[in-house]
Length: 338
Ligand code: ZN
Image 1 (cartoon, rainbow, N blue to C red):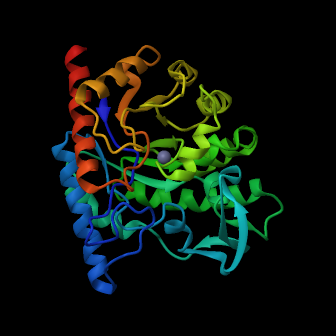
Image 2 (image 1 turned 30 degrees about the horizontal axis):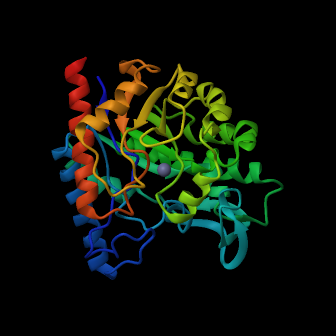
């Protein structure tokens, strides 16, 4: 009861990529880079297991961007044709690559990573993929009739990928959909449908992670505009509760999300974010336990997992380790009480 897991990403060691930087450039090349990714993954498997994390992630040590790490292995995208796009509903404007033809995978994208990591993991292994709507909010469309059509096309590719990863022994496949919190209407209209396509036929556990983003300035500024109560989840949770996804990962620590919104997910397992990724302060186990106990008013302990609000990638390595240990210890405190 009350298993522990993480949202996904963990910091790259400073010898692998620049620390405290999101999407940091690699510090190694060629064969050394590939070896470095494997070594860094082993460190994080060990750190998570030592901290009492039951369902571990490879920490996304093999990729530098959670969406482009998938897209750069797909055909149908022109990386030189940049389009200016205000992503996450204009939260930040960036030059994004453009879809100019039907999309397909060039090969099995993450299989080698899982073949490497699976034998080293004693318990559950989670793997994260970008969700179809978030992909469509990170790339411009110059081929499909609508963004919804493009989302379904990417969802088919994610489904192919997910089925291979499941066959290689991944226990939980999580789709990251931060865009759900920015496009609530579209989420209900087609985002959840695309998500169902991405998970169709899978027998492993499937999750969707919906957060208010990494603790970067653009997100901190955006959160300031959301008022004293963040009710974005309220608009999308009924559709998610009716979806085929098994688990929903959300942010609860130091968040202005009203905890009672969890009650809208009565048919899902809930990954309660009890670690604030926007703060370098390491939570105490008691603080983690307090967040979990508050969430437990709205979700049965049998359906609850203790998790982080979002990925820990932009944090210093020691801070991330401290937060993992606090998560494991805080969940243990709650289990004792139960
Ligand atoms: Zn997140």
